[in-house]
Amino acid sequence: FYILMLFLFPVYVIAQDETGVDEEMIIYNYPTTIPDKLSPMIEGDFKLPTPVYNKAFRKIANGIGDMNLHFQMPLFNGFMLGGGFKFGYYQFIDFINSNSFSNSGKLFIYSPYGKLSYIKFTTPRLFFQFSVKAGYSIMQFNSYTCTNSGEGAKGQNNIFIEPQISANIFVD
Image (cartoon, rainbow, N blue to C red; front, side, top):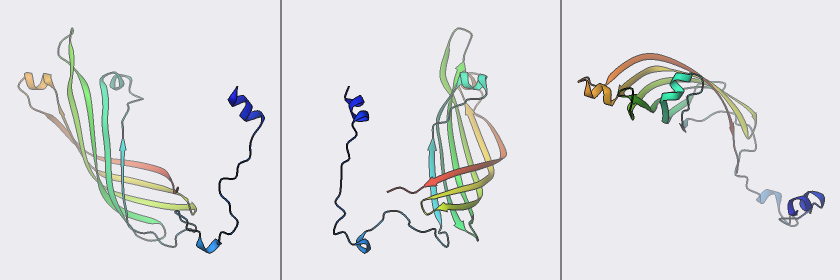
């Protein structure tokens, strides 16, 4: 009933009185103009990886974490060059025999990389970043079954390329 009343009879409320406010005294917590040049950046992110495409992988894998930290320096005209490190951790159902299983399979991924980016501001508060990461991935897998059979952790190393598009918004 109350929600219906709010839609039928909207109320206009003034939260702050703007009379007597000097425009020169207002301080914005966000950029008001598009920057002429870029500055060095340190960025990081954390994801909870979820397998969505590969049905077999989705049934046995649990993504625990995917962390990324990198540094970028401006080159010219919106281009940035940098490097960073990516770490991933997954748990797998380790099939011991046909009647039981345990969550003891673990996959660790260590990936140092280089990054080339292009940053394009559309407004003072919004910019898009188009980038590509290329590096070397070191994967290590260990499980209860491998340990019981007398084998240690298994590993695989490979080169990777990862394109990325991001939208970044400044808020106050």
